Image 1 (cartoon, rainbow, N blue to C red):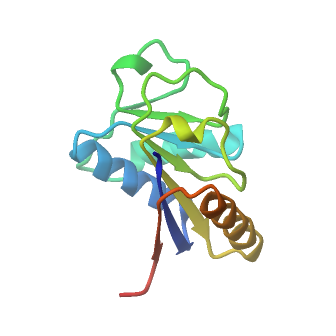
Image 2 (cartoon, rainbow, N blue to C red):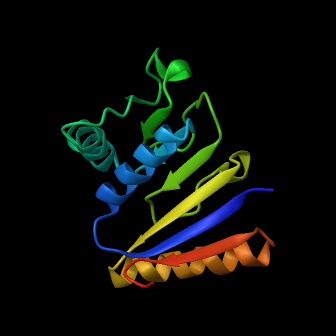
Length: 141
């Protein structure tokens, strides 16, 4: 069953997603980053290139011919054909279609009240379906 991890109180969702992708890549994991819009996907793509002067995170947009060999996929289309289903980082305010195909889902919730409310609704929906849930609040020890 899919494990779902909520990370809340995140001031910079894109930066946070990039750091999660870097951590997954370092652990030889494969991750899909699901953006809310095509503009946000483009911003995420750019952020992955500029995250660090010393780190390289191999990534492509969904649908790229190199996607099957690439550990990090960026998309805004949850219906896109994806080459792997290890981890999904959800930056949207909705429950992604097909999330249950992934071994693990990271729900990234910002400090914005509307985003937090949508995150709480997803948390309740996942809990009703009895998915294993964890919750990490940024800024708390």
